[in-house]
Length: 175
Image 1 (cartoon, rainbow, N blue to C red):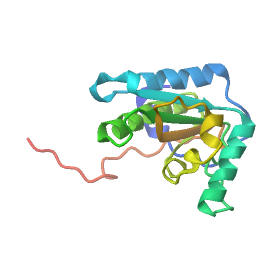
Image 2: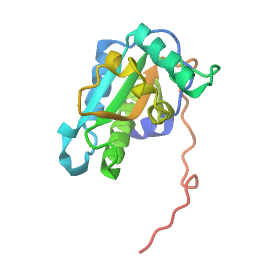
Image 3: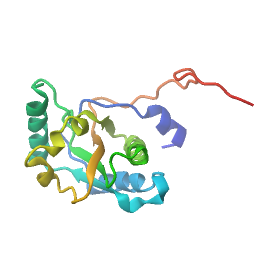
């Protein structure tokens, strides 16, 4: 897909079909994440965990409902894959910016593959992933802390090209 078409088609998806992603699709998204701009070029300070195991995804969803008390919401939106970006220095602004860049690259690749995706932060910030038993199931390496996440899968419906505009975000040009 043409890059500008990808940019204008990328959107948040919060409803997924149950079909799993192929190994090839996951690898393409990982490859896209690997090519994100990283603060100080310290790629070794980041780790991407991909969770496709339905039991682990269900355990994360269940724990999120317990942690937040919101039993009506699925924080993973029924997606078949959860990508977690972890950093060695999670409190540093550069770590958060780099993690966001990794996720955005993976979002764009998901769109190029006609997959839906959604940046998820609530489940990162509310302590769900730190709850007893969850972190171990996820296989996040020692010394790394989750800072950003993305779910991906086959959306219900089609991704649609959005109108191109320069007026969504206020801007000015100084010459």
